[in-house]
Image 1 (cartoon, rainbow, N blue to C red):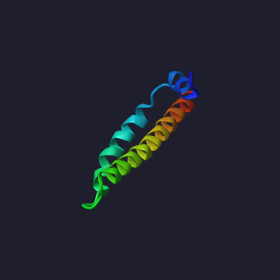
Image 2: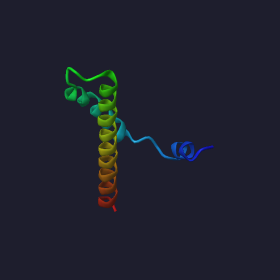
Image 3: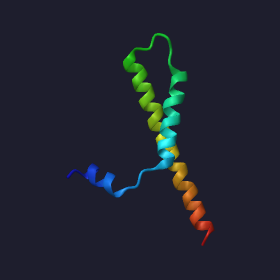
Image 4: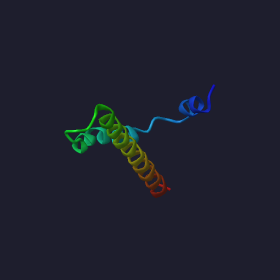
Length: 72
């Protein structure tokens, strides 16, 4: 089994990351221009979705860390 498969099985899915990725993919439509090729549009969508996932995952961890430290 690969390390990636082991990582996926051991780590829970980040809800904040998924929400951020979906929002990023939707926002990417605003960055398209009329002369963009299909490949360029797909690249922009993937880039915005990845950035959205990273930001959403970061915010989810930050909020959960603050919530856990304040309840102690």
